[in-house]
Image (tube, rainbow, N blue to C red; front, side, top):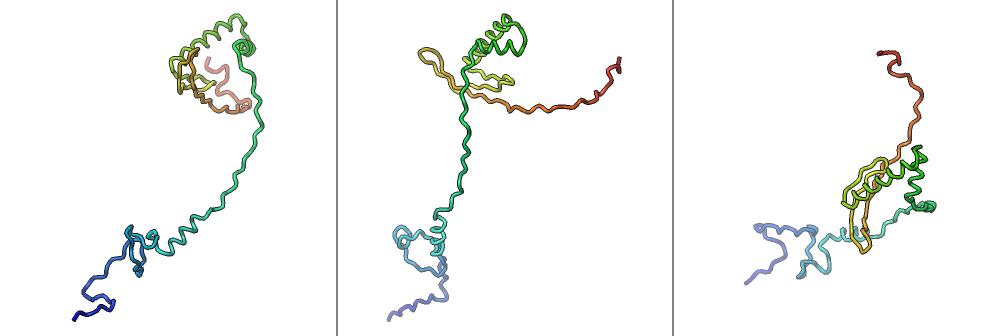
Length: 167
């Protein structure tokens, strides 16, 4: 006659290892996908914690500062450039105009070749893309300008050496 098991494991048989994600005393049956009743395999308490963590958290308000609209200045044309250079440098217009035109031609040739320009205080100019179109060339450039450092006013300091010294 066969003996019925009372549910207690025999002392000789080792205890089965619990599956990962289950509590030690959890004896749920697995379905084909390995999950019991739509459970994701996590312990019961972990499900509640996951639901609480998925609840929308309070979002910190974003402060938007409104800047004043910048008025666009008119384009700087070659005539205006020549006039400003003459005003700042103090040289005559008939000498400044050919020099400025030559400098602009050199800059234009360098950019059409795809060369980067590093011209202080203007900054570093790099050609990102270039495309030939029917009536010319379209280039996308990136200009990185250095930050303008405020000039520090220096007080009259004593020179390191007297002007008469060393002669």
